[in-house]
Image 1 (cartoon, one colour):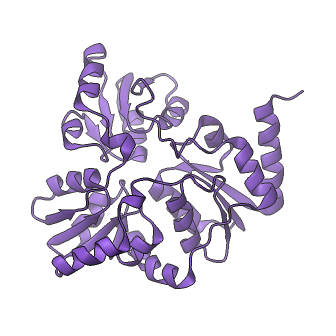
Image 2: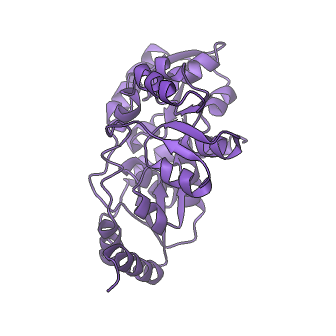
Image 3: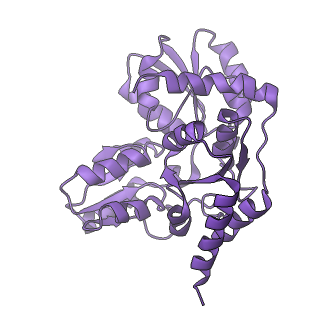
Length: 307
Protein backbone atom coordinates (compact mmCIF):
# COMPACT_ATOMS: atom_id res chain seq x y z
CA UNK A 1 0.00 0.00 0.00
CA UNK A 2 1.29 3.46 -0.91
CA UNK A 3 1.88 5.97 1.90
CA UNK A 4 -1.04 8.36 2.25
CA UNK A 5 0.98 11.36 1.02
CA UNK A 6 2.14 9.46 -2.07
CA UNK A 7 -1.36 8.26 -2.91
CA UNK A 8 -2.79 11.76 -2.51
CA UNK A 9 0.01 13.24 -4.59
CA UNK A 10 -0.72 10.70 -7.35
CA UNK A 11 -4.41 11.63 -7.27
CA UNK A 12 -3.51 15.31 -7.44
CA UNK A 13 -1.40 14.68 -10.54
CA UNK A 14 -4.28 12.79 -12.15
CA UNK A 15 -6.72 15.64 -11.60
CA UNK A 16 -4.17 18.28 -12.50
CA UNK A 17 -3.62 16.66 -15.89
CA UNK A 18 -7.34 16.20 -16.42
CA UNK A 19 -8.09 19.86 -15.65
CA UNK A 20 -5.06 21.25 -17.52
CA UNK A 21 -4.18 22.90 -14.23
CA UNK A 22 -1.08 24.45 -12.71
CA UNK A 23 -0.35 24.36 -8.99
CA UNK A 24 1.38 27.42 -7.55
CA UNK A 25 2.74 27.41 -4.00
CA UNK A 26 4.27 30.08 -1.84
CA UNK A 27 7.55 29.37 -0.03
CA UNK A 28 5.66 29.47 3.29
CA UNK A 29 3.54 26.40 2.50
CA UNK A 30 4.19 22.99 4.05
CA UNK A 31 7.01 20.99 2.38
CA UNK A 32 4.63 18.41 0.89
CA UNK A 33 2.61 21.23 -0.73
CA UNK A 34 5.76 22.76 -2.20
CA UNK A 35 6.82 19.35 -3.50
CA UNK A 36 3.62 18.77 -5.52
CA UNK A 37 3.56 22.30 -6.92
CA UNK A 38 4.56 23.11 -10.49
CA UNK A 39 6.09 26.36 -9.30
CA UNK A 40 7.18 27.59 -5.87
CA UNK A 41 8.03 31.23 -5.31
CA UNK A 42 7.47 34.51 -3.51
CA UNK A 43 4.64 36.92 -4.26
CA UNK A 44 6.35 38.56 -7.24
CA UNK A 45 7.44 35.30 -8.86
CA UNK A 46 4.00 33.76 -8.31
CA UNK A 47 2.19 36.78 -9.77
CA UNK A 48 4.38 36.65 -12.89
CA UNK A 49 3.84 32.91 -13.28
CA UNK A 50 0.09 33.29 -12.83
CA UNK A 51 0.03 36.07 -15.41
CA UNK A 52 1.93 34.03 -18.00
CA UNK A 53 0.50 30.52 -17.56
CA UNK A 54 -1.27 28.70 -20.38
CA UNK A 55 -3.14 26.44 -17.96
CA UNK A 56 -6.94 26.56 -17.78
CA UNK A 57 -7.03 26.19 -13.99
CA UNK A 58 -4.74 27.80 -11.41
CA UNK A 59 -4.62 26.19 -7.97
CA UNK A 60 -3.07 28.76 -5.66
CA UNK A 61 -1.57 27.32 -2.49
CA UNK A 62 -1.18 30.54 -0.55
CA UNK A 63 -3.62 33.04 0.85
CA UNK A 64 -6.62 34.90 -0.55
CA UNK A 65 -4.97 38.09 -1.80
CA UNK A 66 -2.59 35.99 -3.91
CA UNK A 67 -5.45 34.07 -5.52
CA UNK A 68 -7.34 37.34 -6.09
CA UNK A 69 -4.30 38.78 -7.84
CA UNK A 70 -4.04 35.70 -10.05
CA UNK A 71 -7.73 36.02 -10.94
CA UNK A 72 -7.40 39.68 -11.87
CA UNK A 73 -4.45 38.82 -14.11
CA UNK A 74 -6.42 35.91 -15.64
CA UNK A 75 -10.12 36.86 -15.63
CA UNK A 76 -11.05 34.06 -18.03
CA UNK A 77 -9.29 31.29 -16.09
CA UNK A 78 -10.50 29.30 -13.10
CA UNK A 79 -8.52 30.20 -9.97
CA UNK A 80 -8.93 27.92 -6.96
CA UNK A 81 -7.90 28.58 -3.36
CA UNK A 82 -7.73 25.16 -1.64
CA UNK A 83 -8.75 26.56 1.77
CA UNK A 84 -11.41 29.25 1.52
CA UNK A 85 -10.52 31.04 4.76
CA UNK A 86 -6.74 31.20 4.21
CA UNK A 87 -6.38 34.94 4.60
CA UNK A 88 -3.80 37.56 5.52
CA UNK A 89 -4.30 39.59 8.71
CA UNK A 90 -2.10 42.39 7.36
CA UNK A 91 -4.20 42.71 4.21
CA UNK A 92 -7.25 43.24 6.40
CA UNK A 93 -5.56 46.08 8.31
CA UNK A 94 -6.18 48.62 5.51
CA UNK A 95 -9.35 49.54 3.62
CA UNK A 96 -10.08 51.54 0.49
CA UNK A 97 -11.68 54.19 2.67
CA UNK A 98 -8.47 54.51 4.70
CA UNK A 99 -6.56 55.24 1.50
CA UNK A 100 -9.07 57.80 0.29
CA UNK A 101 -8.67 59.63 3.60
CA UNK A 102 -4.88 59.55 3.26
CA UNK A 103 -5.17 60.86 -0.30
CA UNK A 104 -7.32 63.75 0.91
CA UNK A 105 -4.72 64.65 3.54
CA UNK A 106 -1.78 64.27 1.11
CA UNK A 107 -3.09 65.22 -2.35
CA UNK A 108 0.38 65.36 -3.96
CA UNK A 109 1.38 61.88 -2.84
CA UNK A 110 1.49 58.68 -4.87
CA UNK A 111 -0.14 55.65 -3.28
CA UNK A 112 2.13 52.61 -3.29
CA UNK A 113 0.36 49.45 -2.25
CA UNK A 114 2.03 46.27 -1.04
CA UNK A 115 0.63 43.32 -3.02
CA UNK A 116 -0.36 41.86 0.38
CA UNK A 117 -3.68 43.70 0.18
CA UNK A 118 -7.22 43.13 -0.97
CA UNK A 119 -8.57 44.02 -4.41
CA UNK A 120 -10.51 47.09 -3.22
CA UNK A 121 -7.27 48.56 -1.82
CA UNK A 122 -5.41 47.92 -5.07
CA UNK A 123 -8.27 49.65 -6.90
CA UNK A 124 -7.56 53.00 -5.17
CA UNK A 125 -3.75 52.71 -5.32
CA UNK A 126 -1.42 54.02 -8.02
CA UNK A 127 1.03 51.13 -8.10
CA UNK A 128 1.64 47.79 -6.38
CA UNK A 129 4.90 46.33 -5.14
CA UNK A 130 6.22 43.22 -3.48
CA UNK A 131 9.00 42.93 -0.94
CA UNK A 132 11.30 41.89 -3.80
CA UNK A 133 10.78 45.04 -5.87
CA UNK A 134 9.54 47.64 -3.35
CA UNK A 135 12.73 49.70 -3.30
CA UNK A 136 12.93 49.73 -7.09
CA UNK A 137 9.26 50.71 -7.40
CA UNK A 138 9.60 53.55 -4.90
CA UNK A 139 12.68 54.89 -6.71
CA UNK A 140 10.76 54.86 -10.00
CA UNK A 141 7.99 57.16 -8.76
CA UNK A 142 8.38 60.83 -9.70
CA UNK A 143 6.48 61.97 -6.61
CA UNK A 144 8.54 63.03 -3.61
CA UNK A 145 5.72 62.06 -1.25
CA UNK A 146 4.58 58.42 -1.06
CA UNK A 147 1.70 56.92 0.88
CA UNK A 148 2.74 53.33 1.57
CA UNK A 149 0.14 50.75 2.65
CA UNK A 150 -0.41 48.56 4.56
CA UNK A 151 2.90 47.29 6.02
CA UNK A 152 4.79 49.69 8.29
CA UNK A 153 7.73 47.26 8.45
CA UNK A 154 8.44 47.19 4.72
CA UNK A 155 7.41 50.84 4.37
CA UNK A 156 9.82 51.91 7.09
CA UNK A 157 12.63 49.92 5.51
CA UNK A 158 12.10 51.67 2.16
CA UNK A 159 11.77 55.08 3.82
CA UNK A 160 15.13 54.68 5.57
CA UNK A 161 16.74 53.65 2.28
CA UNK A 162 15.30 56.66 0.41
CA UNK A 163 15.66 59.68 2.70
CA UNK A 164 15.12 62.00 -0.28
CA UNK A 165 11.45 60.99 -0.33
CA UNK A 166 8.78 61.51 2.32
CA UNK A 167 6.76 58.46 3.29
CA UNK A 168 3.36 58.38 4.96
CA UNK A 169 3.04 54.90 6.43
CA UNK A 170 -0.10 52.98 7.29
CA UNK A 171 0.16 51.08 10.56
CA UNK A 172 -0.48 47.56 9.30
CA UNK A 173 1.95 44.72 9.96
CA UNK A 174 2.53 41.01 9.48
CA UNK A 175 1.89 39.38 12.89
CA UNK A 176 4.58 36.76 12.26
CA UNK A 177 7.39 39.12 11.28
CA UNK A 178 6.41 42.07 13.48
CA UNK A 179 6.45 40.08 16.72
CA UNK A 180 10.00 38.80 16.21
CA UNK A 181 12.24 40.69 18.62
CA UNK A 182 15.83 41.89 18.62
CA UNK A 183 16.41 39.61 21.61
CA UNK A 184 15.41 36.62 19.45
CA UNK A 185 18.19 37.49 17.04
CA UNK A 186 20.74 38.32 19.74
CA UNK A 187 20.13 34.98 21.47
CA UNK A 188 20.74 33.13 18.22
CA UNK A 189 23.92 35.07 17.49
CA UNK A 190 25.29 34.02 20.86
CA UNK A 191 24.75 30.37 20.00
CA UNK A 192 25.93 30.68 16.37
CA UNK A 193 28.37 33.61 16.24
CA UNK A 194 29.60 32.86 12.71
CA UNK A 195 26.19 32.39 11.04
CA UNK A 196 24.90 35.29 8.90
CA UNK A 197 21.40 36.50 9.79
CA UNK A 198 19.09 36.95 6.77
CA UNK A 199 15.94 38.93 7.58
CA UNK A 200 12.71 39.78 5.76
CA UNK A 201 11.92 43.52 5.58
CA UNK A 202 8.48 43.05 7.17
CA UNK A 203 10.28 42.88 10.53
CA UNK A 204 10.56 45.93 12.78
CA UNK A 205 13.47 48.37 12.66
CA UNK A 206 15.23 47.02 15.77
CA UNK A 207 15.34 43.54 14.24
CA UNK A 208 16.42 44.75 10.80
CA UNK A 209 19.30 46.66 12.40
CA UNK A 210 20.80 43.29 13.41
CA UNK A 211 20.65 41.79 9.91
CA UNK A 212 23.61 40.79 7.80
CA UNK A 213 21.22 40.88 4.85
CA UNK A 214 17.65 42.15 4.37
CA UNK A 215 15.56 40.84 1.49
CA UNK A 216 12.43 39.11 0.26
CA UNK A 217 12.15 35.34 0.49
CA UNK A 218 13.52 34.87 -3.04
CA UNK A 219 16.37 37.29 -2.30
CA UNK A 220 17.17 35.48 0.96
CA UNK A 221 17.35 32.18 -0.93
CA UNK A 222 19.66 33.66 -3.54
CA UNK A 223 21.89 35.23 -0.89
CA UNK A 224 22.20 31.90 0.95
CA UNK A 225 23.11 30.13 -2.29
CA UNK A 226 25.81 32.67 -3.12
CA UNK A 227 27.29 32.99 0.38
CA UNK A 228 30.33 30.91 1.34
CA UNK A 229 28.93 30.55 4.88
CA UNK A 230 27.79 27.11 5.96
CA UNK A 231 25.02 28.01 8.41
CA UNK A 232 22.43 30.78 8.60
CA UNK A 233 19.60 32.11 10.71
CA UNK A 234 16.61 32.79 8.49
CA UNK A 235 14.22 35.40 9.91
CA UNK A 236 11.05 34.92 7.92
CA UNK A 237 8.29 32.29 7.84
CA UNK A 238 9.89 28.91 8.44
CA UNK A 239 8.44 27.29 5.32
CA UNK A 240 11.26 28.77 3.25
CA UNK A 241 13.75 26.43 4.96
CA UNK A 242 12.41 23.56 2.85
CA UNK A 243 13.59 25.13 -0.41
CA UNK A 244 16.84 26.28 1.17
CA UNK A 245 17.55 22.72 2.28
CA UNK A 246 16.87 21.36 -1.20
CA UNK A 247 18.95 23.99 -2.96
CA UNK A 248 21.85 24.00 -0.48
CA UNK A 249 21.95 20.51 1.09
CA UNK A 250 25.51 21.06 2.33
CA UNK A 251 24.47 24.07 4.44
CA UNK A 252 22.51 24.37 7.71
CA UNK A 253 19.55 26.69 8.14
CA UNK A 254 17.92 27.68 11.41
CA UNK A 255 14.58 29.25 12.21
CA UNK A 256 13.33 30.67 15.50
CA UNK A 257 12.23 28.17 18.13
CA UNK A 258 8.76 27.88 19.61
CA UNK A 259 6.76 28.28 16.40
CA UNK A 260 7.47 32.02 16.34
CA UNK A 261 8.10 31.95 12.60
CA UNK A 262 4.96 30.08 11.53
CA UNK A 263 2.05 31.73 9.70
CA UNK A 264 -1.21 30.02 10.71
CA UNK A 265 -2.94 30.95 7.45
CA UNK A 266 -0.12 29.72 5.23
CA UNK A 267 -0.16 26.46 7.17
CA UNK A 268 -3.87 25.79 6.61
CA UNK A 269 -3.43 24.10 3.23
CA UNK A 270 -3.07 20.32 3.26
CA UNK A 271 -2.62 17.88 0.37
CA UNK A 272 -6.22 16.75 0.79
CA UNK A 273 -7.38 20.34 0.25
CA UNK A 274 -5.45 20.59 -3.02
CA UNK A 275 -6.96 17.31 -4.20
CA UNK A 276 -10.49 18.41 -3.28
CA UNK A 277 -10.00 21.75 -5.03
CA UNK A 278 -8.98 20.04 -8.27
CA UNK A 279 -11.49 17.18 -8.14
CA UNK A 280 -14.46 19.40 -7.27
CA UNK A 281 -13.30 22.75 -8.68
CA UNK A 282 -14.08 24.17 -5.28
CA UNK A 283 -13.35 27.53 -3.69
CA UNK A 284 -13.41 29.27 -7.05
CA UNK A 285 -12.10 32.81 -6.61
CA UNK A 286 -14.16 35.60 -8.14
CA UNK A 287 -13.44 39.32 -8.31
CA UNK A 288 -16.15 41.79 -9.30
CA UNK A 289 -15.46 42.82 -12.90
CA UNK A 290 -15.70 46.56 -12.21
CA UNK A 291 -13.47 46.27 -9.15
CA UNK A 292 -10.92 44.23 -11.10
CA UNK A 293 -10.91 46.84 -13.87
CA UNK A 294 -9.96 49.50 -11.32
CA UNK A 295 -7.41 47.34 -9.48
CA UNK A 296 -5.57 45.84 -12.45
CA UNK A 297 -3.69 49.02 -13.49
CA UNK A 298 -1.81 49.10 -10.17
CA UNK A 299 -0.50 45.60 -10.91
CA UNK A 300 0.27 46.38 -14.56
CA UNK A 301 2.25 49.48 -13.55
CA UNK A 302 4.31 47.32 -11.20
CA UNK A 303 5.17 44.86 -13.96
CA UNK A 304 6.06 47.72 -16.30
CA UNK A 305 8.86 49.07 -14.05
CA UNK A 306 12.18 47.79 -15.50
CA UNK A 307 13.98 45.19 -13.42
